[in-house]
Length: 313
Ligand code: CAA
Image (cartoon, rainbow, N blue to C red; front, side, top):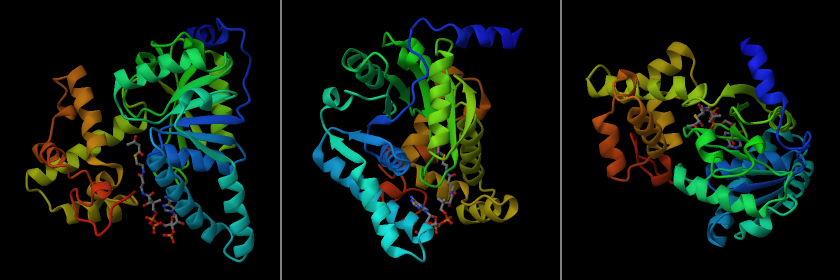
């Protein structure tokens, strides 16, 4: 019965749009995630337009992409540095930048948003884009915590709207969560799944529930590690070592929190607590609140749980 309902939900799209093969991609937001997605899409032959609010930000995004491509090439073309340099130039040619969303979405098969985690700002953006983008264009959000259906509700293309959630660092992490809402058409969902595979990623299908799969398990784990430390049950360093050597995680919870950004993690948890205040899994952490209030957001600001000699772009 559940399967039947699922088929009905996805099978009869209100739009006449068929399976879209995604070739031209517009990515809104040139931060860590947006730049990472742009890099991977351009590396797999897509024509990418990266959009942000200023040329300065976009210059930094391109620098991030170049830096990351150099790391990829060092491994992939270890014995053929010239082929590696050629690959970098080819990928960079596939990326253009723009501060004008209106022109950037023309001809686009997919508009993927990776901007600030603020529902109103995302809704405003998509409502605007809905009027500017071609009819066939699929919209997707890389939100890590907001319901996709709340974002898509600002548009008139509910059947051509889904979630594509990537992981940091995008060039290295193999997973993409593909999220369909109750109104996402089967064609759109399939296009997003196929796109993820063409990027060389492994997609998993997710329902539009808070945190999808990964963050719903992962963010409470990070918070519990912080609370463990607050209760004096272990030092940050020992907790990090324990999780790396005890269960084989590549980074401990404090290193990883700093890597992702404390503001991002706190934002996710605060949102869930608002929705479900009695759930003890969503309890706050005084230390986390204090660090974020002080602007100690992790690697990107030079300090979080640990201090860093350098900042991310
Ligand atoms: N671009 C390209 N290559 C990269 C890279 C990047 N950004 N980061 C790492 N690499 C590659 C490089 O080849 C690098 O070698 P060089 O340093 O010589 O360039 C190689 O990986 C090894 O990297 P490191 O020495 O820095 O360390 P590592 O072996 O630990 O790998 C890591 C780095 C891949 C980040 C690994 O530590 C890891 O997997 N960490 C966990 C990351 C994670 O959990 N991410 C999910 C976060 S949750 C999220 O994103 C969702 C959300 O919504 C909050």
